[in-house]
Length: 421
Picture 1 (cartoon, rainbow, N blue to C red):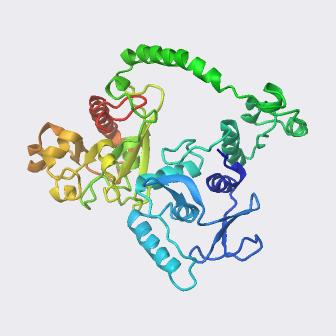
Picture 2: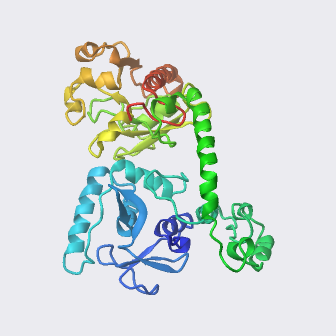
Picture 3: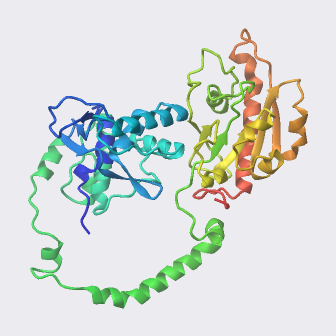
């Protein structure tokens, strides 16, 4: 099987371009000196940092709906990384109309789901080294690691690793003088000449002889692992990568917690009104994420939570990852949910109602039973300052404790999602 030329991989080139702060240039021709064109008219994407131009119709290793996503769709998703979901969808439709119109390059951009887009942007920015939607590079795994490390080293201003020498050399950042010496090395032969001589030899019979021993060793390892691993015992095909849990907010204007203030509330433990000028989160953001260490699930690694206020772009399997739903008690919030009846909804996930201290929760919320956690925060006073909000921390810790207990009860583990995922 032919290996992929890492130097020509569109995803790695785009990631390196972002790390080097070297913007890509859409153009009509492959010539690097050609003028920049609109994304609807361009046929090539030029990467100035590597002097490479690639067709925008080139399929990438990013897989959505079981098919590769082309470079134009990937680049469009990166350009619109700060755009809210409705605007992103509208702009994708407008771009497809321009592509099909006079002067357009033809084809269409693929509309990525919000979780796919978040995963892609996180990987392109270098915040993550793995993605469940990106197919690994074929061929030499060490070479793939080097290509990925080059993007990160470029962002840090370091020296990119060289590709000569052993695998240990490839994975390190080398001193420039040492790198020059390694680059001057002359390869004395390949595996055919070193291990097999001039004439390649067929060793397939060795595999047949070793197969019974390997099968027995694998069975013994599985037998030793299963009793100590309840996750594998319940689900032998469980994925090794733990999915990100999802928190849903109420889009109601009367909600005390909105997209603009939920991040500061859950991370710093201080309530600030959603319209406060001191907030750094954008009220128009469609996706946020916060990190939290849940010791009873994973003592070493913080868990990343995705926060959205609408399930508009949900796939069916995303609902098993919803671990909390913030509500104001208004039933219309659940109109587009998988479970539209509140009592059924809060049998599958935790409900959270946040109200003012001294004011009882709505009768509807009380009627939904123990599946909804009702908490209260002090009334906001602009003159009190942060020192007067000391009880907010206790409220936030109570919410996180309820989320952690609910997740643990549903089967979330250190390396796996819920049992019903």
